Image 1 (cartoon, rainbow, N blue to C red):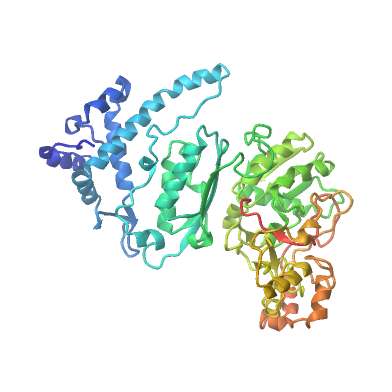
Image 2 (cartoon, helix red, strand yellow):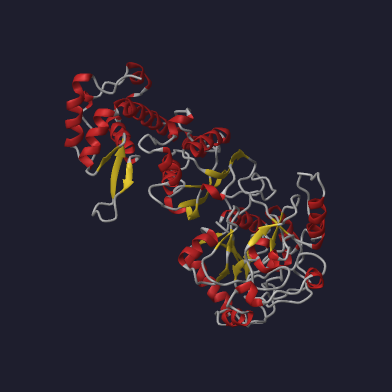
Length: 574
């Protein structure tokens, strides 16, 4: 790599940097790029050389930003080469004199990017002739060229963040055509490893879908890297990244891969494209629509369906009031669910929602393609963004997430119950049988009494395996899950699910007569044992005070009672 300046030009370059507060380095005499780089540039790009220097310098300085102390009037400082700079002039002087080679490399990358941009007009002409517009990939195909500089941070800072700062989890997606998913996969793998992030990232020709966890410093650098990449910078903004408390500990490992779909609906993107979704509603707009919908629930026939696009174990612990929550355990069952219940949506206005918005993109496109709905709307940013704006809105209960946390809490409502004793409970745990994939709702009192499986079958199987010296390590489908109807029908009857369901004796949601079996084996725990000083009567009284729609009404928009065995977790869905 050639030197950015000759040895005797360092002082002049420093003076040039300090002279232009807006980083406009126009004095090309100070720059001596190698002849090979000059040969690569066409005439038009050479005219933009000063802009390339400016952008390269600005990007480099940007990567050195760190938050200032709370008592300082300034919002940010800069840290580089183990030195802390409180003034902008100081970091400018340091970068100009000590990082010439890095600036030269960055300038070359910017110049090549500009050269590629000049060729996009030719692609636009081809689009007019019926040829699809091709994306321009990063000109520097080396993955390392698109990784942020972390030399100014110690490994401990990157992993744990400054001080005792809590980490966070990012949730995002971006639908856009990608020409080279394997390159994006290699870049994402290197980027996450570079920043010590864990999580899951799915890449396809239709875009990218990710959820990653780490320190706030690492996630900030990740967002900056995504927004500076030519593939995504014109398609994403900072608001597209949903954040929540967590960290790298929320995921057991990093998994990045190339798939046919970035969210597995089971239908090729070439048949149902993300490019024809429903109308996006902001959280505020969606809130008004739900309010209007709930005000009409006394009418005999509503023209609106509030549709939950998630799996049953997600809506079981939290959902919008008055919603239709399909009793499906995989999003790949959603198209079949729509087909089987198509008459339910005829001439209806449909309000769709999911966790982060990604499932609604293709789910709404599929529903629109059927041509039976009057209108199809979807919640932009999903429940995640809605709860940020309306934590005490019309969504009650917890928000299920596909990581080790299982759920996020934004309000104090509990809308589900213990599978064994019926006490209010909404904290999932994995079935205690090693081979089972199910999630189970069992309160602490029942757990202490040994009721930790998803159903009677698994409870007995777990006891047998515990006494056996050799245990099989492979996972198998739980028998109670195998008995579930794969695609439920909403047309014969609907039953309203109240916002705070009452315990139902002898009604087993996790297998045949689970509660009856529970009472036969051990006495039912007292409510004070389950909830401490808060009795069940107090719980019911508190739930009764919550505002909500009328307790009973009929119509196709009613939510089903989720009383089916097994909560199988499919961690790639959201």
